Amino acid sequence: MNAVVRLLPIIAERRGAFLGTVLASLGAQLAVLGLALLLAHLTGTVSAAAGGGPLGEPALWAAGLAGLAVTAAACTWLEAHCSHDLAYSLIGMLRGRVFDALRRSVPDRADARRSGDLGAVAMADAESLEWLYAHTVAQTLTAGAVLTVTTAVSLLVNPALLLVWVPLLAAAVAIPWTMSGISARQARRLSGHRAALRADLVETVQGLRELAAADAVGRRRAHLADVARAVAGGEARPASRIGAERALGDLTLSATAIGALAVTAAGVGELPASAVPLAFTVAVAALGPAAQLTDLLRNAGALREAARRIVAVLDRPQTAPEPGVPCRADPDPSEGLRFENVAFRYAPEEPPVLDGFDLHVAPGETVALMGPSGSGKSTSARLALRLWDPDTGSVRVGGIDLRDLPDARLRALVGAVPQDARLVSGTLARNIRLAAPDASDDAVRRAAADAGLLSPAAGLPDGLATVVGDGGAGVSGGQRARVSIARALLTDPRVLVLDEPTASLDPGAEAAFGELLARPSRRATLVITHRPDTAAFCDRIVELAPGADAPPGE
Ligand SMILES: Nc1ncnc2c1ncn2[C@@H]1O[C@H](COP(=O)(O)OP(=O)(O)OP(=O)(O)O)[C@@H](O)[C@H]1O
Image 1 (cartoon, rainbow, N blue to C red):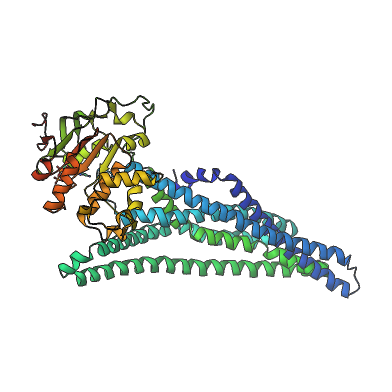
Image 2 (cartoon, helix red, strand yellow):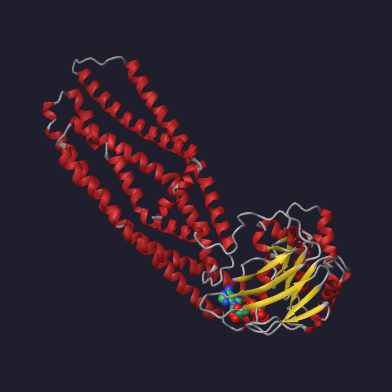
């Protein structure tokens, strides 16, 4: 199904604002048209009155003109109000849906998309579609309706206009319509170039230190200049096409106007003098809405492309769907985290990463999961967080299959400390609170203390008020790991999964971290690690063999 049509129901959710936009836009256009016709009629009547004809009641003329002018102004204001109301709520709804779709489907098992591309979908395409649904659809309906009315009225008044109007107006609308395929292709290419530039810029800024160290800044700058040139080329082509289309459209509309005026002039002798201005105004009345339609159609290809990209994101397969019938039972206190006969592969054609994998981490126990690179340690951590589901077997927390837990309950039961914890700019307290925005100051302080952030060894004299720069600048690897743990502890999860938490720590920080792991708690803790010194702080070590098809040795 066409992506634009597929997204149309989104308007139904704000049907009041949409209807308001259409009616106000229709009211404004009809009032402007009425004003033009009334003025033309007045001009004819006044010139006839100068020759001795009746002028009519001036107060009535004034009231008619003032009424139409006020209606046009009020409807224009109302249209702007309703369409902006509709526009901003549609942007919010579209972005919300895009982020929901991304959250449900991230990480894709074999996702080749770059963040710049997804950013473009979420930001630029949502804005394009806002323009489509909040302005274009309503204006197209209005322009179509006004065009039909003006055409019908003019043809009743002067059927000879048919000869000029039908071919020329059809050509004016057909030009942008037939070009919409080319316009969509150009929009697709341009969006690809822009996404590449955005992603390359982000990577360059993030990797500037490494680029400088490798003396590669110059090469990178040349590469960015190439990509920027591709963007400029991608922008120039649609601009030339739109310019040519606009010129052709304007030519066609001008020819229509000249033809309509000529046809009307030919019949002037048969008309009373007072009706001549009205006849000329009627002859060109359809040109305004026709010009508006051609303008709107000119963007149709690019809008179709934006809708296609949004739909592609919305249709991404859900990696961990919500349960049909969620489990309401309390977790069994004697059960911690259990992998039972788990098999998992990233793609059907690839060998399994895990096959027949069994492991139980009991409440109060800390287990180190070790094994060679590629043996599936991080994959096990992701399965425990239900980023993906196993192909066969099950992963359970407190005896409950993760697939039976609603997302919010699962996140409260299982906490994660990822390998590359991300910090945002702001205080440490703000960073910890990301896991539970409504947590009290006391809870944040407790989690920070449990993660060792408030001890003198953490080296943070300002404690929770310490300010972190963009992306965690100004904080050491050890401090970052502790913030990440405090974040995970804030929800007091039954299960804690740590993926290489000490990978970037020096031996002193690793030892301090190990003491945290060794502290008694009721939590089941799974620590993915390469480092024997970290594993030594755990109660038990489990070795994972690559493509293990038998339970691992302990
Ligand atoms: N998103 C993915 N798509 C496809 N294959 C993947 C993906 N992530 C990991 N793999 C593959 O799955 C296998 C297991 O990866 P995993 O990261 O779980 O191993 P690991 O034991 O944690 O390795 P390391 O110690 O190097 O971090 C590897 O062969 C890896 O290439």
